[in-house]
Each structure stands twice: as C-alpha cells, then as structure tokens.
Image (cartoon, rainbow, N blue to C red; front, side, top):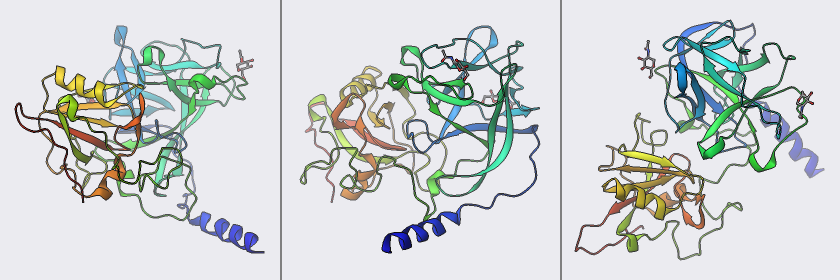
Length: 350
Ligand SMILES: *[C@@H]1O[C@H](CO)[C@@H](O)[C@H](O)[C@H]1NC(C)=O
Ligand SMILES: *[C@@H]1O[C@H](CO)[C@@H](O)[C@H](O)[C@H]1NC(C)=O
C-alpha cells in the first residue's frame, strides 16, 4: 500500500517538467548560437560546449570543451550545422571504427554526407527550463535515425563527436560512445545550469556536490580529514575550493585562472602543480577530475570561501589518483605557490 502510494506520488511529481509548446520549429536558425551537450548520466560530457578544433585545409574537428576553439556563432541551414565564418558545415564521414560501428562527425566545405538535425523543444534535465534541442534526423545517404555520441579521441585528445547508426549492434565498453543531446544556446546567453532550481523529478546519478559523505561513488574522507590534498611538500599550499564561471556569484564569464591549462584523464595534483610550476605560475587548480588550470591571479569574485562546508564542492577524485581530490563540477581545488623561505601552510577551514 505504502509503496504504491509513494510511486503514485513520484509519478505525479514527475509531471512538473516544463510545458512543451505545440508547433514545429524551423530547420533554419540564422541567429548565431553555440551547441551545448547534455546527458546527466555522463557528468564528463554534461553541460559542456561543442568546440571547433582547427584541422587541415580549413576543416574543423568537433571536440568537447576544453579542447579549443570555442564557437558561439553557428547557424542551422536546412537542418545542417553551419559555421558561416569558415564556410564549413557538419558532415559524417571518415575515421570509421568497426569496434563500435561509429563514424566521425566534423565540419568541412566538402560534399561528404551531411548530418541533418531538426530543432525541437525539450526540457533542461537540471532545471526544467524550456530549451531548443537539435534532434538528430539522419546521416545523408544512410537510413533515417541513429544519433550523435561522444567518446575519447585517439591520443587522449578529449571527447570527439561520432555518429552511431540506427539500432547499432556494436559498442565498445572500454571507450563507450556516450549518447549526447545537442542544445542550441543563442550567442550572448549563458547556460542556466548555475542556477539550478529545485525540482521534484528524480535526478540521474551524478557525483555528489553536497557532501562527500552521501556519495557512494567516491570514497568518503576520514572524519578528521577535509576533502583536499596536502601538496605543501611540492611548495604549494591549498587555498580552498574556488567557483568557476557557472558557479560563481552572478555567473560572470571568464575562467578563475586564465594563464594556461592542460587536460589529462590521469590527472593528479602533482602533475598539475608541476605543469603550472614549469610555466612559472603562482596558482594551480584542478577541476572535474582531469583539468589543470594555471594563473598568476585569481579572477575577481572567485576567492574560495574558508568554510569546511565549501570544500564539499571539490570532492571529485583525481582521474590519476583515487587518494587525491581534483576539484568538482565547475569548482577548482585551488593551490598557491609558497613564498621562498616562508612556511608553507594550507588554509584553515572552519
Ligand atoms: C564567430 O566566432 C569566431 C570565434 O569566436 C570569431 O573569431 C568570429 O569573428 C565570429 N564571427 C562573426 C561574424 O561574428
Ligand atoms: C553497424 O550498424 C549497422 C546499422 O545498424 C548494421 O547494419 C551493421 O551490421 C553494423 N556493423 C557492425 C560491424 O556492427
């Protein structure tokens, strides 16, 4: 009885999703936009932008940020993603992988089979905002259907965009191609994921951002230890868990550390500090298990709080070390180089 009541209530609250307007959206969008990727089941790709990495002959390869270059002025021409600047459009052709039966999607001026999308309304899975999604229709000359997925590119160059055919029987569990939803974000607007509104719908599992004790996917630190890694032996003291653009107050744009960055699925605090040290930077910060950011100053408004509670935002384990913490989702585990001859002491948290 109780169980059926609970499931009835859950079913009722699940209907609080946004209201989808009727009608059909045009498959031509002339107002410039960027493409955001969503799939809350896969935090590694969720809420990250599609970037256009320069390749030979004017082609652009599609990668997820932080692989450059950010582009927010794409358009859609009869269902085809187009970058008027480069005179190129999205196609699906090349670098076919038999292991998972997927083919690369990239942008070129040439006449390879195009990727065709249809704009549709959808609900943002984080905050129920109404959004415009690019529903994958087909790869020209192939059967209708299939989809876009993301997997790690060879040489560990970040996440690349792939086409998976309809009813694809193949899959590669060692480098799973994660299904992606493409969202239209008009140029000049920012994603609203930083201001997640409470929702009663069930959320897919994502790494916990509230407390490290409630997550089973990451090892909880011992009761006395706060979630940060002591790097004073490398000459860097821990400053705190600093917000990135999405999580900073008022969500201003721009990174917290703007010197240089590197990304590595096997990131550790040692690697990041060594990288920033080699560039002569004062600050080093790790984020999202695998990113390393360096700078000589912390951007305005990004100074980390001194509360122990704030450290819960930086409880992601490093990709290269399960005993170290490498930031969180849009939060940096921030370190500062210790002055020569002075004591190297981590910040205190209360
Ligand atoms: C489009 O975006 C690119 C990259 O941000 C920029 O270099 C270019 O000037 C933009 N083009 C237009 C027409 O705004
Ligand atoms: C690839 O997918 C297509 C479409 O589902 C299927 O016909 C074909 O057999 C698949 N090939 C491999 C190698 O899995």
